[in-house]
Figure 1 (cartoon, rainbow, N blue to C red):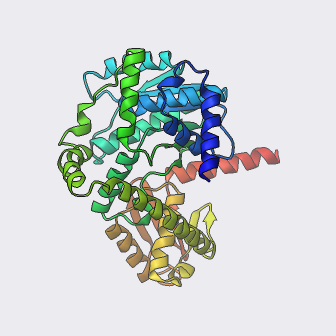
Figure 2 (figure 1 turned 120 degrees about the vertical axis):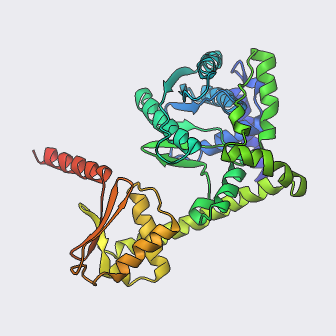
Figure 3 (figure 1 turned 180 degrees about the vertical axis):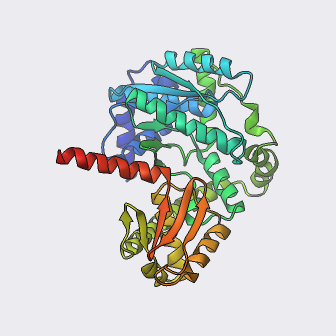
Length: 373
């Protein structure tokens, strides 16, 4: 196996050697990127890199540009202007300069971060960012976006989710490949420590005259991750030097467990006479499951509809109400609001009503009608 990997790395380096910035790349970072792409059914015809301008994303942009050149794949840089800091305009120009130096197609979008959703600054900015990625991906006619999350980020995510009481799905943290609204997000460096990227930043400065931007909010105590980095990380590093590797392994194991649980939930759902229009399942069949499997299949059903997961307490309350209904659901009509979704029970079936589901159903009905015509 080691000899095979060595041969693969040798061929990879030979194929990328012609790129003018190939000498700035770390061979193992290139290999990790390549192996992530091997998980896909086929190499994409065009890709994008989320380029904020920090060390992490700049390093990934460099390595992706070099790797893609060997496969004749055009690369786009996606920069999101959040409008939250006075230097955001300068960052956009600075990022555009690096993208041009690397031969990337430049794309950027300004977003409005809605702070009135009750999600907090970090979550609201993240939602706005992914929406911008989706929009830029549609314009560029691509469906693969690379993100520069690394082992340090992964370990932080696991730790924060542990503190929030997440289960196997949540503790799986970030996946190497994930899908969101039709866009595939690839994270090739989840097993790579951030310290591995630091020499790349030095190389960019020395050879291209370009320095990564410094976002002070990354270490600001006002934000959750900033507080973790400033208060907890130094203590963990001093007492448990390999804590990040351990939590990274925990994430991988949790992902494996989550896959098995999803398969069980999908099998259980098929026994509940599921329907798409309306989106629902049979109450009596659901109540025949064990309490643990009731919760499992309910989460799976909600996730498949793109619904944000309710808290444990809220889910328990829904289950209590569903269990207390008459077996056929005729004696009362249950209606529970969750965001813009409505969970109802009528005529013995549990149904979810939402604008997204209605839109999907209407689209499917329209396609069927057109095909008949």
